[in-house]
Image (tube, rainbow, N blue to C red; front, side):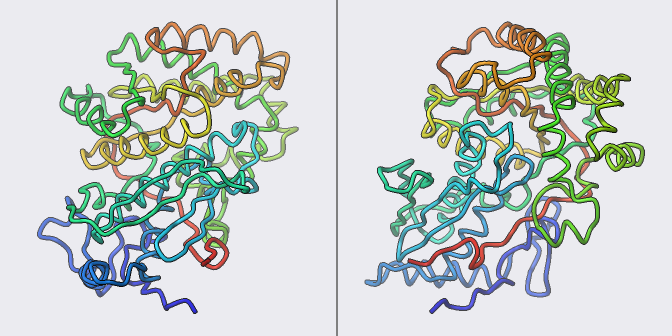
Length: 415
């Protein structure tokens, strides 16, 4: 029998990541720290005490809190490609293949990266309950979708400070201020990967390098816009009304895309592929790609995150490393926006070659990849796993967050 879940004990992501309720008490400077829930603190204190007792099982309410923290992870097009099983002191994280079968998600690599971010969120949140997390990635199992087993043990350890920003992390597509990424921020993001020795950040800092990267992104986004499979997948994930966004709790609310009024009209008009295809012949794909390239040029910096291998366990670790870096950026007040087309196109080429791409795009892709390798000469391109390419900078807070499906009977199997 499941115990009732005190939903008011956590910030609700569906009502902006820093939502407040009557039970929440803000810190002296609420702009710098998330609100602290009375129920959450009581749950943490009570759980720390109970977990030090002879009973090794973890209360259902703690499990649900950990899962609610876990699903704040990023995912491609906010598809949320995960599900869970739980027993007395384990959480099993599984890839939900049906959530994302897009062309971008070759061999479910993008979903595995997202599941890695889920794992890291859960590990961070568990420290607030005095729990140490043992993570086994892709254990031997009859279920090929089992990405990770998390085993929790009581431990005398401090709460991870990144717990405070789990509900604040987001993708920011707004225009970034003209600035240079400080060496302190670079050092902090590098230090965030210390638990993952095979994960590396490869930096693009300076207008010359960002200009080169902008040209690469322009070509990749042009291909993305001209490929019917990717166009139709994107439009399946855009929620064109508030009701649609709140009903599905996934995908992109239209305002989250920061397209502006003209861009929103364009998105509505081009939902049918024949219209988009006709406009592409008139240069629409180049105009769309120019918008992405301009965003790169105005960034304070950009980085590529890689891991040493390109098997699924490597990408799971890469997802964990990515989440720590992203949360660290959030804590520093640095905004981040993924530029996933480049890395996902490369991953498909790495795993399958170019045959799956449209013939007219293959020559353009070779130019993309030539520029990509020239920009990051230190990367072992044949062997490294490319987790994510992203831009960084300073931007106003987003106006419309994405939603999350809350962990429920549809997502959790209590063993």
